[in-house]
Length: 173
Length: 198
Image (cartoon, rainbow over all chains, first blue to last red; front, side):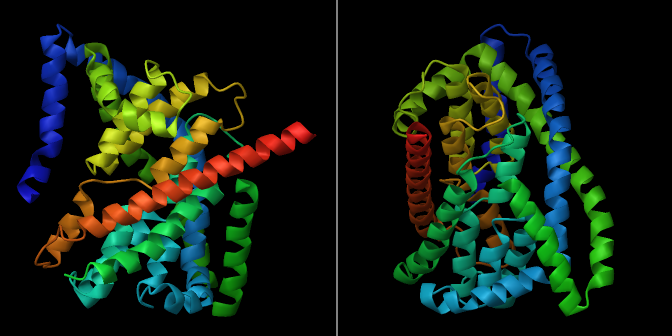
C-alpha cells in the first residue's frame, strides 16, 4: 500500500504528460501557459491569507485557544473524544500547520496505535482546515459574501469529530 | 460574517493575553504572522503554478473530459443543475479525483481552477453562488480514499499498521460530507425563502 502511494504522484504527472504528447500537444509550452496563469491566482491570495494568519497566530500565541479548549472540555466526555485530543478539534478548522504539530505531539506522546493516536489520525484524515479553505477558495475569485459556507462547513467538521471517536471505538481491531 | 469572526479572533486574543500575561509573545506573533503569510503564499504559489501547468495539458488533451465522465455520476448527486460538459464541471472532477487520491497539495490548486469557472457563471460577483457554497463545503470536509499524509506520519512514529485507520476515516468523512452538504442545501433554501418573502 505504501509503495503504491509513493508512486501515485509521479505516475499521475507522467500520465498527464504522456497523454498530452499522444494527442499531439506541445506539452512544455502548454505547461508554461498554465503555470503563468497560476501565478496570477497566487498573487490574489496574499491579502486574505495575511488576514487569516494574523487572526490565527494571535489566537494561538495569546493562549486564547487554550481557553477555548478548556471551555469545550466538558464536551469531551459527552462525545467520547479523549481530553488530550480535544485541542486538536479546536485547532483543526482554523490552522493546518498548528493541527499538524499537535497531531505529531499526540502520535509521539501516546503512540500511533493508542486510542488517542487513532482518533487523532481519523480526525486528521477526515477534515480539512475549514477557515483556510474558505479564505483561499473565495479569496482567489474575490467573493466577499460567503453566505452559509462557514456554518455548514463547521457542522461537517463537528460530525467528523464526533464520528472519529465513535468509529475508532467500534472498529477496535 | 468573516468581518465578525476575524474581529472576534483579534479581540478575544487580546483579552486572553491580558489574563494570561502573554503580551510580549502576542506582539511578536503579530509581526511574525506577516512574514508567515508571505511564505505560506509563496509555497502555495508553487503548487498552484505546478498544477495549473499540468491541468492545462490535461485540459487540452481531453484527459479532464475523460475524468469528468467517470466522476459525473457522483457530481450529479451534489450539483444536480450543473452542465457536465462545462469547464467548471471538468475542473471540479479533477479536484474530486485529487481529494480521493489523498493528494491534498494538488486538490487546492485544482479547486481554485474550478472556483474561477464557477465565478464566471455566478450572476453576482461578490456573493457566493449555491454551487460555490456546496463546492467549498465539500472541500472543507475532504473525502480521501487514501489518507496519504496521515499514514506517512503514523509510519514515522512507529505504527504497526499505518493504514488501519482507513475504514473509520471513510465512515467519518462520508458522514461529515453528507451532513455538511445537507446543512448547506437547507441553509440555501431558507435564505431563498426569506428573500422571496421580502
